[in-house]
Image (cartoon, rainbow, N blue to C red; front, side):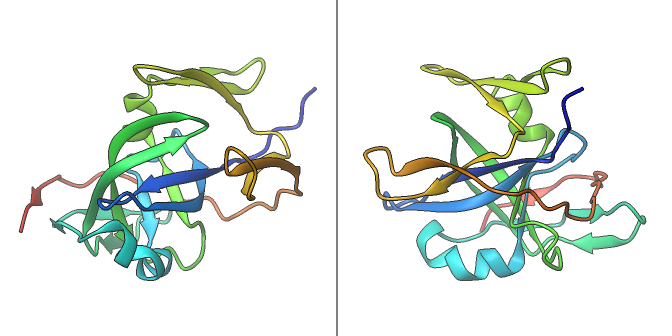
Length: 171
């Protein structure tokens, strides 16, 4: 039997001036939102542009409410598949850097093969399959800007998001 791991992938966030920000993300089909950790956002916000106001309140697994600090909208690239999506910015207390939830999975037309524990994702020009094995993408200076490396996987505390009424207001 294949051992199951958390899906962790290096992703690229595309900034409005052409900047590319590389960050670690957890793929979670149980999360109702895409989420970015507030501390990670603070370090990268100068390259990604302003947040939109958000009135979203997320609830974590223990039903504790967390108010969003704002919403970032932009292009996200995972394993060559690109899509525009939104991230709510919250303080995750270091549980994860970025969380790709149901909105992203829907946008990339994800198909999860539970027998093989793979997820097929696609955009208009590319289709690829991602896995949850110990091979992770990590930033390196090779021709693609990525290199496969073996890394041990540590388990983070599970955070399940539930969705509160959604309203985004543009500044």
